[in-house]
Length: 138
DNA sequence: GCCAACGTTGGC
DNA sequence: GCCAACGTTGGC
Image (spheres, chains in turn blue, green, cyan):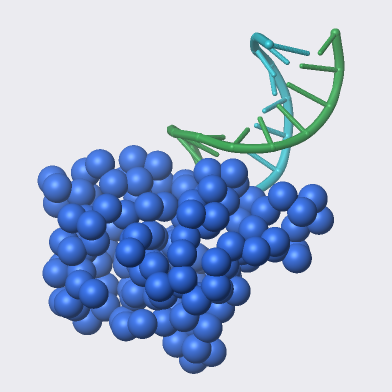
């Protein structure tokens, strides 16, 4: 299983809304690197849900329920989207400041390439962030 | 609300 | 194909 991190501005699409609706189509990605990550996702992969701009924290864990398919909102037909569902909220949201303060996490994309909206997370970072958030890595 | 970082666009 | 101008993202 692979691990990822997806970002959303809470004003655009929040974790609370994902929980309420039970699933989401992750569309609107218009960056080739992010799109390549979407294409690499498999059903069952896990993704941290990160609130950008407001909140600035990993707030929950989601699971991929449908692999990449063409994003209907993209007129060029080049970009893709996936579907995902909520798995569990973080017991304690893991703030960006806490991630930056952790030396083991200094190389993750969230810190190094903050503008990338869909990022891979390695297993070690996944476990550590789960631990920081008070949830069991699964 | 500002600004730095980055990606994209378009003129040459 | 280069590079300046512009737009967008996201932290602060």
